[in-house]
Length: 99
Length: 263
Image 1 (spheres, chains in turn orange, green):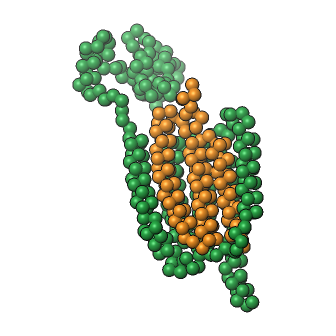
Image 2: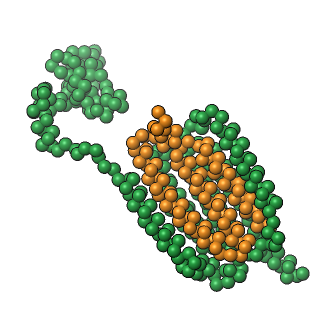
Image 3: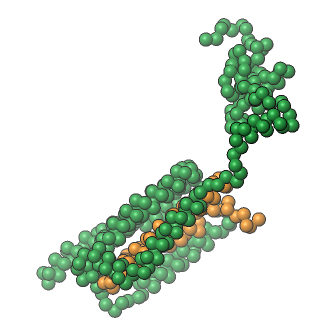
């Protein structure tokens, strides 16, 4: 099997995640779609590491995971703060600057 | 020739079977994540996508990353997501109606364009050689190989990332910290307010709810001497919910005496 198949899968997952970020309105689901995009990028890193026979790609994927964990912690704290003041987790409701 | 056949039969075909079984499942779970209405179902599907990705990592000789994917992502991050979902409300399903008109067709068109572009790009790109594989790089074991890189070449990024983690933890604590804007009044202040206030109507305390011979539940307003119900004898939460009975039906003068005594 060609290792490039993993790259196709990665592209598909990334695209699905991007659509989810744009289309969904629940902030938590939007956030999960961002995670899906990060995971797709990780899969591409691991695949390229295998294609090139070099472990550097896996180390970069590892760093991506750490940064994603930080992002989840802060992002979910922001969502909880917004929910506490506005009683809603919808991204459309947080449009105070528009009015 | 025999060696090649063994190599093909032992490494490549099982991986191809694994890929062609799990990849459609992964894509289907990711698509369903977009389409299901409830956020909890999305989270479960996302967890399944992450487990599939961990299997792909392990299949690609990235054992350490596969385990980290399961422990950190599926174990910690997704449980954090579910925790927040429970906190915000499990049935907080968002309506799938679009608020910005025409957003969905535009998003899908752009996604199809981007995906097609990337797929055709990968299809056209060639390395000029076949994939090397990680057998040589993993000769000392995958964990040892990654550790060697992480603590030599990448030791400075590693330290920076640890600082980032601590900052993120502090930031989450600051964001989650709830500070009330004004102090709660003490019992002494409340008492002073009651007696030094403009009116002494409630100085002896609020009327107790439901003071009737036939009914004394907490959701029935007490009657004032002039016969009107005292709304302030009911808990404000019950009033807001509308869980109030009218006290008129329990007045002694209106008791239906034709019926027998209630038990």
